[in-house]
Length: 279
Length: 279
Picture 1: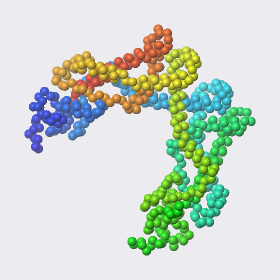
Picture 2: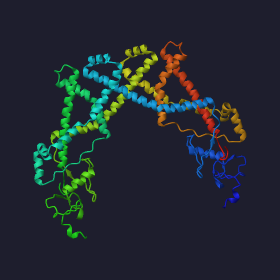
Picture 3: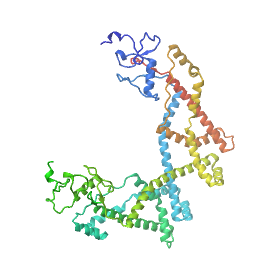
Picture 4: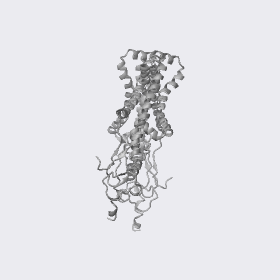
């Protein structure tokens, strides 16, 4: 051990000064290290720990050699200050939950408002207000926010896909092909191309689809009321008119969507990969 | 070239069958490849492309050898279907913005409601309603949501930190030490420990701190009204009472916070790293 004759001399592992260089400096042996990294100046180690903690004064710091945690001792905290510290910790724990409560409350309040606006839109301004004034307040606080929730959840049901799957399963594919586009169907059969079952597109779970569900669900009452007024003017009750309008809209939209999807399916089935030289 | 004598024979690079094996199969040379990877069955390449596209039927697919994009041709789309496709694309583009609008609208409406509740809380239920009924609706729609915004922004001003910094800069540190805790100050000076300037804690920018600002800002009118009623019952106007209550609360809380921070600063300055063997 080449440092053997020097281990009795204190040498700071931060600034390399010895006891002789700075006779008044305070020394500390803060860890299990022996040899040249046993002793360190109190002030040098303080600076080193400050750097390690990088502003977080409660972080634990360990010896880089032997991994012992340094024991950092603070002057005692008075009862007033320690109770303030406890209060501060409590507030820090409660605040995230309170903030979450504020966000949920804000959403809830918007849902209640949307529900009330929808009731007035569907039943008419005057009748809607009357109905809500007569209803039990508790029922309103639960029932009104259920309206947008139900609209959005209802929008998430992809009933067209089920209809389409049912159709494809029970109706012969060739028959279907010739119903929709007899010419191409025959042409392909004539060319001897095997009918290809196209890959099913992955169900949309992207953010755009989510925003579409949100918007589609929330705009539904407006569309339903509008179509109800346009097509079912002879119906007395505003609610029935809006319901009929909504059913009409959903039905027509569903039919178009099924037709469009089936056409896309057929186009997929009929795609052809060209030779590179073909223009 | 060992395959030289076989390049005139078509061999599918997917299934390795030759023209002789399947005489009726359709062949395609879809890329710039020569030799053994020049020819491929139409149906084999279709399957291979399906796998590459993984459900996304509009994705481009490239030859794994020569990186040429395969030309995939679909039957033409009718005018009805192509207009539906365009409509679908439009809806997909508009929906994210509409959804963002819904979220902003929901926040705005909650802010308006909070503002109205605050006005009624501070001025009293009856007076508050009267003031809002008399006010210009446009002014209300802008003014009411400004209330929670101003409260939260106001909460973000860390005036205590500025006061504390000013104090530390212009008042001698040793004087400060002996004001707050003369004994320890003198003891440390006696021990010959250099006064250590503690690292400034990094300003809180974590999520907990953000929720604290939100909650603290929004609870302020309630606290101000409460303290106003408790301490300034002799003041007639509800607004003045709440303002006085708010100023009192902010003042006392700020003083406690400054005191607490300065004490923490001093404790940091006086921390000692212990020898490992000390208990």
